Structures are given as C-alpha cells and as structure tokens.
Length: 286
Image (cartoon, rainbow, N blue to C red; front, side, top):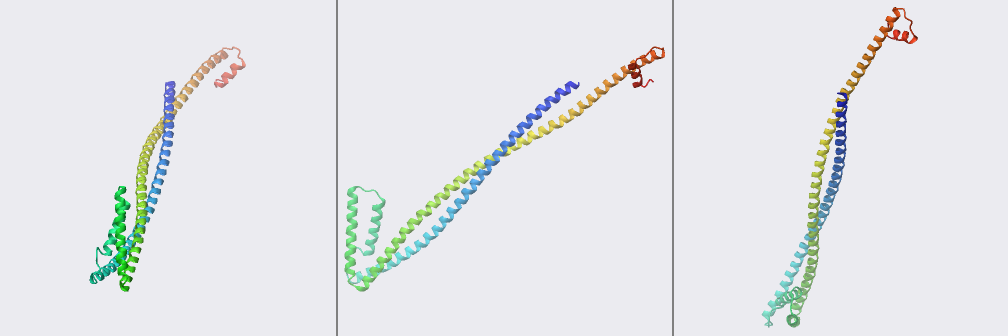
C-alpha cells in the first residue's frame, strides 16, 4: 500500500510541476500582452494629442480665413461702389460705348480663372487670350477717357487699389484655406491611426485577460496539487512510522523470546556468555 501511495504521489508531483510550468508560461505571455497593450495605448494617446494640435491649428486658420474674407468682401464692396459711381458718371455724360468697367473687370477675372483651371486646345486658348487682351484694352480706353475728370480719376484709382488689395487678400485666403485643409487632412489621418491602434490595444487587452485567467486557473490547479501532496505526505509519513514501529515491536518480541530462552538456561544452571548477560539486562530479566 505504501509503494502504491508513493507512486500516486509521484504522479501528483509531476502534474504539479506541469501546472507550475504552464502557469509561468501564461504569466509571461500575459506580461507581454500587457506591455504591447500599454505601448499601443501610448501610441493612441500620441496620435490623439497630435490630431488635437492639427485641429486647433485648422480652427485658428479658419478664423483668420473668415476675417480675411470679410475684409476682402468689404474691399470688393467699396470698389463696386466706386465703380458704380463711375458708371453713373458715364451714363450721365454719355460716355458709355460698351459694357462698363466694372462688368469688364468681372469678365476679365472670370476668363483668367477659366484659363488657369480648364484645359483648352491651342486654338481655343489663343482665342481666349485675344479676347482677354481686347477686354483689357477696352478697360484701359474707358479709364483713359474717364481719367480726364479729376473726381472720376480719383474714384477709379481708389477702386483699382481696393480691387488690388481684395485680390491680394483672396490669394492669402486661398493659401490659408489650403493650409487649413492640410491640417484637417492630417487630423483625420491621425484619428484614423488612433482608431487602429486603439483596436489593436483592445485586442491585446483581450489576449492579456485570457492569458491571465488561464494562468490563474493553472495556479489554482498547482495549489490543489500542492495540497494533495501534503495530504499524501501525511499519510505516507504515518504509514512509514507505523511500519517502523511494527518492525521495532517485532524485533523486540524476537529479542524478548531469545532473552527468555537464555534466562531459562541460566536457571537450569547453564553457563552464560557476556552477550547473553547483556541481552538479559536489556530485556530487564536480570
């Protein structure tokens, strides 16, 4: 029975070591998953913080764009009023031969924009350039005629200055709008990256929890095995003590029996050896 218990204890010990090894492996995996998760969470925060900076810069630029647009529109409105005054003067003095300067200026700006943004054949572009040239000559002719009047000349000069400043502001608006769009695009891309790293972090956290739970389960099995080992040790130790005690008792009986035999010889007058006397003393027969 003792050998059977020892063999069972050996198997439990092997099982305990397996659970211990597996628990340590799972804890190592859980630590790695946790480290990866933390790295990804830090990356997510970095992306979000960077995206916020681009958002703030975009919003700041958009505010500036709006302010410049208002100034540009105000300058255009002032120029339009001045051009309208010139048109009124032309109508009153019978100088209107074709479309007014303001209308021609609008047409020229439209055709310039069209030339820059659309695709034409060589002939079409040549025709467009010639048309713009004629319109500019018409504007210069009308302006030259109007500039003979000092008041009208002053208004024309102011109108052209306002239009020039408005055009410069429009160029600045376009430049800033592109910068704002660039910050917006970077913000969107960073938020996209943040979403991806957040998803990866969530996946790492899920793996961490699974590994940690499995490690905890292996640890519980290990503790259970340790308890069983202690129980086996108690039983085995008890059996060994019992076996040892039984062996001693058996030996004592044998010694007692031998001592009684020698004591009988002593009573019968037989001669005893020193060992015989010592055995009798140990058995407390003399």
